[in-house]
Image (cartoon, rainbow, N blue to C red; front, side):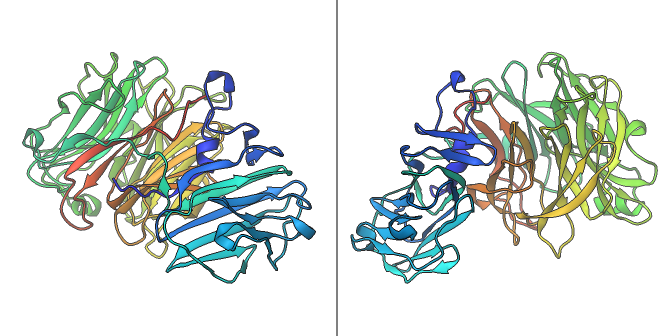
Length: 526
């Protein structure tokens, strides 16, 4: 894992519990979390980012509003220096050792009450460049070395923080804890492990699923579904258990879900190992993709034999089909409370268009029904999350190569239909799977390789407005990476299994699937 993670204290603050009685808060006294951002009362302690500017190339980005914005001395602090939002004569200012010690007023538009003000400070090539409300100020000489901790100070005003991002800084505490290997190439004589999926059983145990690919890293051939268990939050893992081995055939695309009664249900797909994806799409294969379900009533200790549900969940003119990959959800709101929803995708035989869709069960997985498909094509592997108001958000891998960004759509009827399909510019991708999870009220988490050029830079993002914007991000792994599957844990940490090394677009395979616990990101879940 790289040691330099982009960081935003806004996320650290907002993702702590709103119920102070349940545990400590990451916010200093005088600060509270709200849907609009993090709010600091007058004369509160500075809001820490948890990062220092020690590297030669780093930047800070801030979006805030001030209730008064006339006489306050609110500021962005770097060490003992200030980029002041207001002050003498109501003008913004620079003050402190970085800026020569004296107070220097900035000839720029000062902040206005309750109107967003933006500040960015970039450290590069021996200079500090400051942009205040769109005005580029004269560069300041960088003294080098450690410039100090990055903080926000409300002083005499009420400050609402919408964005607080530090890129290239040194974290005071690492975001990612020690990585723990789940699977590695060569284990159990398996060539490659791919397509991770993860759920938390009612016991608190972690159940990790993957495809065990014999002979090569290919999507075609002898592929088994396997599982491991962790009883200590992902630090150690059990021996591998094979859940489905159909000889030389392909058993893949694990997509588990845990029901309210504690049952673990695993959706998967199957095809002959001799059939290639291109043949299945073209309709020239010996078989087609079929849909199956496995069940465990004892938290993953024992499993039923695979049961085919293709007739319930696939139309006759669909060729290619995939469940997940990732994890399904159980709805918590409205008249469809308890519905199991599994994200899927398919290809039409006639048009060969790619679509995302869902399947669902209203009887805890005993029977299944086909839900709605996206209105527009060129999307496939997807993940679904339930929003605070009961609507569903579908986040999709995009096949429109002119736009290397994720797509998303909304369901107002619990997965029966999807509307509002659009690209999400903030969620860039190289065309790859991603993970989406509802953390708590108002907060969504997202992970994917955040690159338009290749499967690299595994990045965690957070949204605080139901997926409309994604203002916070943190780099989890700077190198090659591919599929992932986020899961929040009861202790407030998050676990993300991902291929850590060796994945190269167009060749090679995962050398290892590693669970990375994000231990310092959340103190406690509500």
